[in-house]
Image (tube, rainbow, N blue to C red; front, side, top):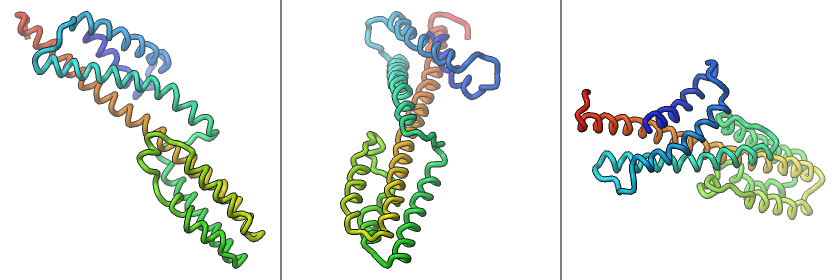
Length: 231
């Protein structure tokens, strides 16, 4: 059991040292899944049907179950999120998203100000201040980050389509650009929400794994000592 836990923990180390000739990351991932599933059976045989007693055994059992649970969640996330991001059509580095969103917001402001300056009409500018400015300026709510949807995007695009009939010819061109910027901002928000979920999961899973390794080592040491072993 201790060997299985140690091997599972090595996968994260392998990812941090990709230059070493230790086999492909894909192969490591497959063995990580196989050993992880196999450890469930080993744990069941080792722990037996009885309920853990004592602080150490209880803590070890809870951390193990949380680690396995987080691994299953991660298996689902890593199989479903990448295809979702790929469907958007453009890969975005997570650390660049805040800067890219600021660029979109800045460009939207410039388009509206230029439209007012060139046409003298303010219909589009008023709509922008009432409905679009906050969308470009603020981050999305927690509910969206937990479960992204296109509800707000569709609502805004629908309202923009309705207001187009009242726009001047010059404002029509500006409105078309805003259409694309709304889509771009929504795509960036989706990337951020999905990639952040993966990062939070990975942080939790790795933390639980290291905690499990430490508890398993302590458990093995205590068992060895109380059975008359030499420290």
